[in-house]
Image (cartoon, rainbow, N blue to C red):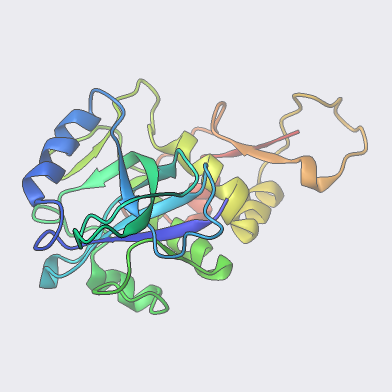
Length: 235
């Protein structure tokens, strides 16, 4: 799994009302679409992305995140109707943010902790370096994992589980967050699924799960140590 930045300027491409309509739909069903990809050579189905709103001044910031459901493919250039092609990939959204209503994951906040990414401009579909990808995922978790119900400002699929976004983040941790994965493994007891307790095992076989998470209580002020207790290492 790799992480990409999909940049979106509502002044030049998809209008903001479509984003708001998508937020309403996400509470009831999966939201899928496609986006043009600049760094298209190595993108694969299953890679992750953040949806970065740009060109809106103080409203810039992350407006969603999810995963790609296809490899890249060539299609008609959406911007220049001149017979040329661009590369695109299909995706589904896990979470969407109304940047007109919410300050979470704002460009101003993100610039302080992840200055490696330009949060105000740049190409759509840019690959994020591995070490920066982990920092992005940790910010996403700290700002959204504690949410239990969607609202007008932050939308995600309704669920009976305490923290609906936990399964998505478990997948991100397994593939994008090696240091945080080590923290979870070192601070939680292993759950044995395919091995007998005490049996020798390769650490590479340990996965992070949220299926039987520890009963942590999260809030907007939760630390990474608090968040680590939501997940369990499984072998």
